Length: 81
Image 1 (cartoon, one colour):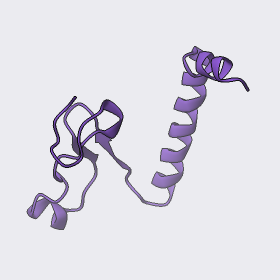
Image 2 (tube, helix red, strand yellow; image 1 turned 60 degrees about the horizontal axis):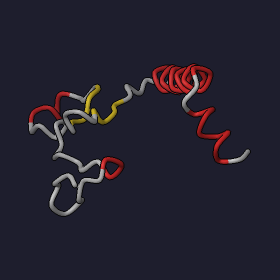
Image 3 (cartoon, helix red, strand yellow; image 1 turned 135 degrees about the horizontal axis):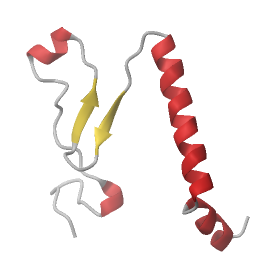
Image 4 (tube, one colour; image 1 turned 60 degrees about the vertical axis):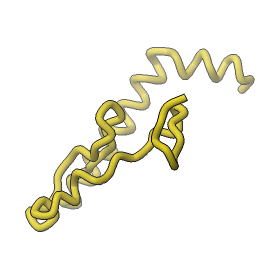
């Protein structure tokens, strides 16, 4: 698939529907195995999702802020361009 067609497809509603369905299916499979998924909230830089009580005691679920490489943040400094 040429790059311009791929780009158009990735911006389409069809791609969004298929991506959402794939994520939904992956989450469903994890939950069926008893695993509560967690993810990184890009706006806050915090991990969101389930953590067991032992991890919550020392705030390890909060994690340190992870630089967003896709938005151009420097992984060393953490500053945006």
